[in-house]
Image 1 (tube, rainbow, N blue to C red):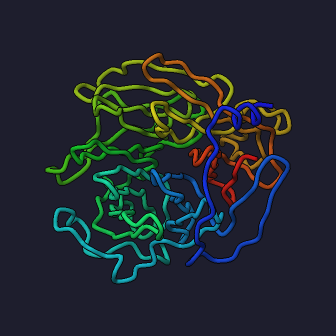
Image 2 (cartoon, rainbow, N blue to C red):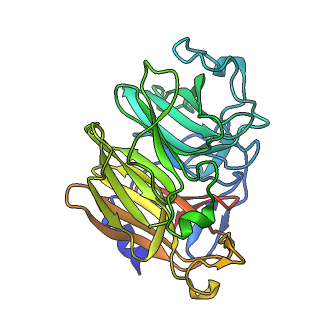
Length: 355
């Protein structure tokens, strides 16, 4: 099985650590997964490097951010709006107040280490405002839950809804928009251009469109390790499209995922991980259908894939895969922690861990 090959190929590790501050949760599993519950639509995941902690977004109203103990396998609300979680930075003065925890709807997330024990967390927020929320993360105390402090937000252009976010080391932020005003999911399933990538430098006051980045369904996003460009998922084409930072008018290259629909894309070492549902699922009638002029919502449970891409060679290969699962669907993100594959979903009420 691919799962067994995957597990054997990774260095397993980890040790028992304290569980203070984490709520009790039921131990659930399926044939191929163990689960962490207490989350709602964990659309994107990020591992805080060198720690046992995973950050999960929540793509439903009030789901906000969760902090997940990968050893205890428990999740807890992270941003609660407490006074000690707010440190408004005047450099990010677009909004005066932090996101309302009761409305906070977190989608794509991006974590960038800025110094030993410190990181910047960017979060796509749909709750109460369409904006990129900026947080500072302090994980200097390896034995304690990382600290989170909200610093400010960057509103999206009027009428535009962000999907994924990433950043360069100089503080420049880029975001994807899946469907710009006047376009639909059905449009990008038909191969029509619907989205784009937008950029905002530290000295700019608003996001601006990067010419040439308009694609059918701009989805997952990641910047190059050397800041030379970025990689974006064209969901409607099932492609990873690479661009140079200095000139985005034409892509550098494209790589197609032939048998699945990649969603988010993130670094793991020197490779990029992509996760998504199978393109052709017999139990769902095959490929995604357009019925009465509307794209199927893909609520029928599909097989899943996690792939790895080497940007240097442009070679993509399947890292792990499995059949449709009765209680986990909508695979959208993957991270590897201590040799274990953790999976996020834009549909499920749990995070999956490959057995």
